[in-house]
Length: 502
Ligand SMILES: Cc1cc2nc3c(=O)[nH]c(=O)nc-3n(C[C@H](O)[C@H](O)[C@H](O)COP(=O)(O)OP(=O)(O)OC[C@H]3O[C@@H](n4cnc5c(N)ncnc54)[C@H](O)[C@@H]3O)c2cc1C
Image (tube, rainbow, N blue to C red; front, side, top):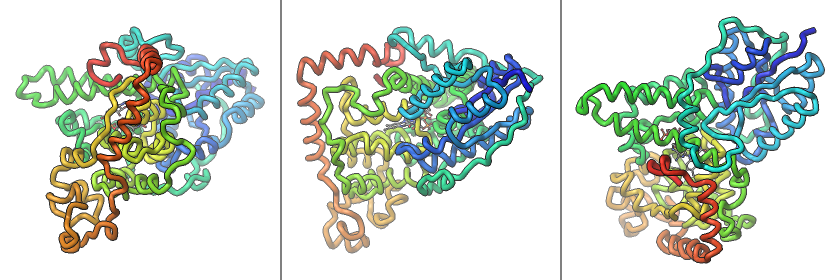
């Protein structure tokens, strides 16, 4: 009988490189790496088949790489506390090692149960930060320099000699169907796994990213010009630190070249590096206030939209890409098929749902969460609220879907790709096909109301209604007082604000 085992619990950190809990566990003796597939989690309304499929691919990759270094990963399906209890009864768990997780309410409560279990069983649970997110943070003063320090640390290496724990059987990695998940076809989803993540990182930093700052906003270019790293970072196939350090290395390389030789790389990498800060900045907000997943950041917006009574017809039109606004519909259909969309278009979809359609952000936010392969609760719920005007500290930005269409897809290429009903509509009408006469509609084979839907709302009137409602709430002195407090607690300080979000 072994004296006790050190369990490394893999969560959303599916790599063995730059993995502090794993290295620390090896320092304490034999190591048992486990991953628990949690069916209860995968049935939550923010979880989806595409997320699981991506996770399963990362898991397989991790299993192979851990096998290569002689530390087979034990995959178990079930409840983490029952699985730990079983291991404890059979071998005695000495210590548990994992990364800190800033997840949704379910993972937060599950971690509280694990904490209770470990305390009751006198098992020490060592948790290490995986991002530049600080647990039990008092306020944001000095946060940016803590982030720099964390990202600047050299990744610690695994020792050459590794001692494996007891020989344990691993469950097969289940399919989404076996987990009881709804079918979620996403034919052009990104492929999971660290190897793929490294390939994506390298192609971005060496070639694709050259015009990132100029091409990130249009969906015609963004699929290639954005890094596409988000799902690899969200499931930890790559660590944020290695992405930051690879970017810094590339910045140094570019700086050694003359201005003409380096072309647009300097500006592109600077814009990209700023966004790597934003990642942790947003997750920090949810870490500090988990209620942001459920309730308005600024309570002064409570009940402004009806959470209980959703207009199902509007929701369905929006989520399937049938609102009658070609650019909105094209973006939604692309997202449905690909599981990814660039920031500007995510913001427009959310803004359209929250302002023009006046739907409560919680339900539409859940729809988007399921569609995003890269779902990251801390970024997601804060962005959802920002684009719905409920934070009280950000500028209210109501996207005009027709203007966005002209700006980001001037000749309608993206629209025609994703809304084939409009493929014969010319540039003059592609952004507002309802302005065609009935004869013109017939000639291009797209009769509005028959082949392609009528506009679900008149966007200018709907936006005016939304703006009035939002600003009415902002007038009072109490509102401004609360906004000040929110800003004090969650607003970014100078260094990060210079580059971006509040
Ligand atoms: C309503 C809404 C919901 C969102 N939900 C998510 C989500 O669930 N998961 C997610 O990773 N991102 C989310 N974002 C932020 C952003 O759209 C994505 O991070 C980005 O599009 C991912 O693509 P990329 O990796 O190519 O990003 P790049 O533009 O190449 O940026 C590199 C990395 O920086 C970070 N980043 C970029 N933009 C932002 C931002 N605005 N806020 C915070 N971090 C950022 C991400 O980690 C990203 O991978 C959301 C944005 C909106 C408007």
